[in-house]
Image (cartoon, rainbow, N blue to C red):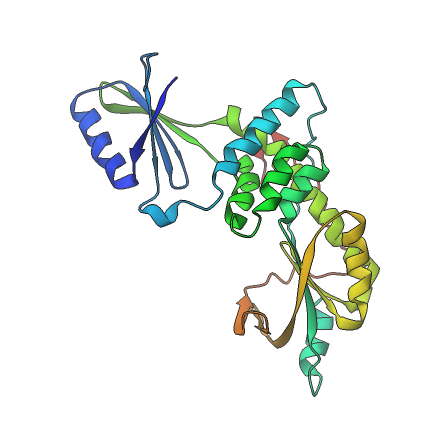
Length: 293
C-alpha cells in the first residue's frame, strides 16, 4: 500500500470534510498528533498521512520510531521469546523523610542528580530488542535526536483509534488492539528493566537515596559512586549536576536546578514513598484489551 504525505492536521480536517461530502468509504487511524486516512481500494497512494500543526511539531530523530518498530518486527519473526506482561511499574520514587532532612539543614547541602543518557533506548538495546547497528546510529546523534529516541520507545505503547466511514458516515470506532498487543509487551519490558535498576540503586543507598524521576536519580554527593557503580554495571552513560531541595508541600516538591539555573517542581504522590518493603512490581491483570484497572 502506497503512502503519501497529506500535510498538517488542518489539511486533514479539510480532506475529511471533503470525503464525507463525497460519501466515500475510508478509515481514519488516529494517534497523538498523527492521522492516517486509509481507502478501501488496494492501489498506489491509497493511504494519506498527516502530522502536527506546524513544522516544529516534527521531532528531531522521529525516523527512529519506525526503525525501532522494524527491529522489533524482526525480533518477533526470529522466534525469540516475547516479553511477558506482569507489571506496570511507575518510574518515580521519593524518600520523603530524607528530602525533608535536606530541606531543614542549615545551610542546605547540594544534592547530586545523575541523569541517564538515552536511558530507554539503551535499555531496549541491552534487552536485545534493537540491533547494534541501529543502537550505534541512534547513539551517535543522541543529543540532537533526544526526543526522537524517547518517542521510538514510547510509541511502542501508543493507542491507535480506528474510525470506519461508510458512504461518508462514521459507522464504528475501535481501538487497534493488534498493534497494541504486538508492541506493548516490549515497551513494558523496557520500563520494568529501568524499574529494576531504580530499585537496585534505592535499596543500595537506603536512607541516602532522595528520589528517582523517570531516568534521573538524586543522591547524597558522598554516595554518588554507589549509584554510578550500578549504572556502570548495566552499561549506562550518564551526566551529573547539582540541585538543592527547597520545599516539600503536601502535593508538591520544589528544588533549584543548578544546571539549568531555574526553579523546578513536581506534583508528587505520597504513595510513591520509598521504604525497605516498597516495590513497584505489583501484578496487573492483562488481556487483549490492556491492563485492567
